Image (cartoon, rainbow, N blue to C red):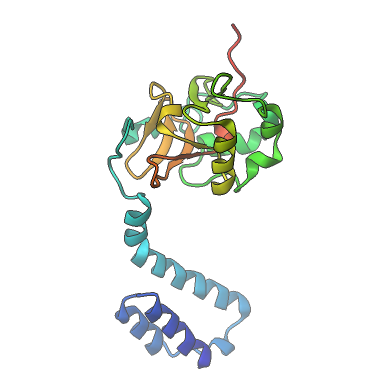
Length: 228
C-alpha cells in the first residue's frame, strides 16, 4: 500500500487532476500482487494519462502547439506530408549519403516518420565534423535533401562555424537559424514539424530566446552536392 500511496502523492504533486488520483485510489490495486511486467505496463498507462493531461501546458511552453511562427518562417500545409509513392516522399533517400550517414536510418526517418529522430548526438558519430572543420561564413556547408538533393540549409550564416557546432552539440542535433534556411524548399507545419516541400521529414522548429531554431536530423540533409 505504500507504493500506491506514493504514486498518488506523485501524481498530486505533478498537478494531475484530483479525479484521476481518486480513481487510482479506489482501484484498490496492491502492487505486490502483480507481476513485474504487469506493473510496468500499468505504470506506462498511467504515464500516458499524465502526459495527455500536461501536454497542452508543455506544448505552449516549448512552442509545439503553435500554428504560426515569427521571423522569416514560411508555413506549410499538412498536405505536404500526404502519402506518396515512398512514404511521404516520391523517392527513397539517395544510396550514397554524405558523412557516412546510415541509409536505412535515413530512409525511415525521412519517409516513414513524423515524430521520431536519430538519437541525440548522432552527427558526432559520423564523418560530419571531421569533413567540415574548415567551414566558415565565407566557406559554408550546404545541406541537401536526402531524397531529392534540393538545397535546404546553408551554414554558418551570421555566425562562426564554431558557434554553429557548439549550439548543435548543446541541443544534440544540427541546429539552424532562419537566415541559414532556404525557404524555397523548407516549410514549417502547424505544430513545429520541419519538412521539405517534397515531403521529407527534417526535424522540428524549437524556438528559443534568439528566435526560430530548426533541430534537424543529419540523415535528412545528407544528400551529395549536385554535380555541376
